[in-house]
Length: 403
View 1 (tube, one colour):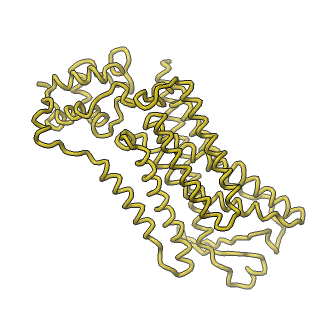
View 2 (cartoon, one colour):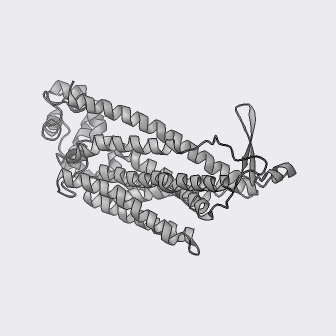
View 3 (cartoon, one colour):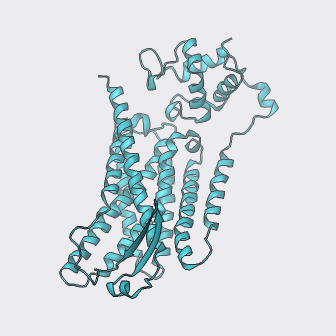
């Protein structure tokens, strides 16, 4: 069976599994953040006597749910042996994501990681550096959290330091890798830290607390503090990671000269929106207004990016001097920029463009990939120009005629 086809099959199945597990992880994360922020002190004496620290009533699916939270073991019964753990969602998301990253980016580093107009280096060096980004981000981020987190105003200091670190990492990634790979790599390094938070600190800390409680000892409070710190970080990381991962479908996001600024602003907008939703639950319990201003600012930041990236219309002088949008002009562009990967022998994505009939047949896809999404040529390997994209656009919008 053709190797290229097998890689595409692996890409599809791994991406499908990655999305499913990510939905499970994000869903459980969002639910527990909502639950934690929606708890109110128990009102009934029986709950207080049982050691309940917070409760929440909810209605869903025609039934009522009463959730209770114990900061330590319940007073009214031994700590149950059968405890539900939320960690495989995180591990499965990272494992499928790393497998997908390996299959698509590391095995094809020369195609996906490298843009020689950005930085010209070998596929092996680019792949090793990409792995280095994942490891280095976790080590530095973890060091920031452990050394600065317990100081006065530690949460604010850590938040500012991590934000600055992400900005620097985004800039550096965009100086070394193709725009598409840089955006995805930034998302992957943050996602790696999220899963490492669960694997290294949150779950082991919970297990140590449980062991202490079952032994009749007082748990070390650092485990609860650290677990809470990393869980909060994970919920704020979520939307920035998602936009970084989705960006590889939208070439116009990452192809600009200052693409790292676009990435930082999009992630900032997502984090601000997430903050509003996290704070909303607590405000609702406390009877305060919902702090929508953070979501409004985040939305305005994203809208500002979209406006800033909007294509500019050519002025009359430029239009008059532009190459006529004839089929012959389009065919010449396709032959020079596209046919190397879309021909009789090599049909990337099952698309061939080496004859006039095939160009007309795939006119919609050519227009979408080269003009609207700007995904093709991959990493602009054949150096198509904006003027050439304009020719294709005007030809297609005029009806994609063959004469």
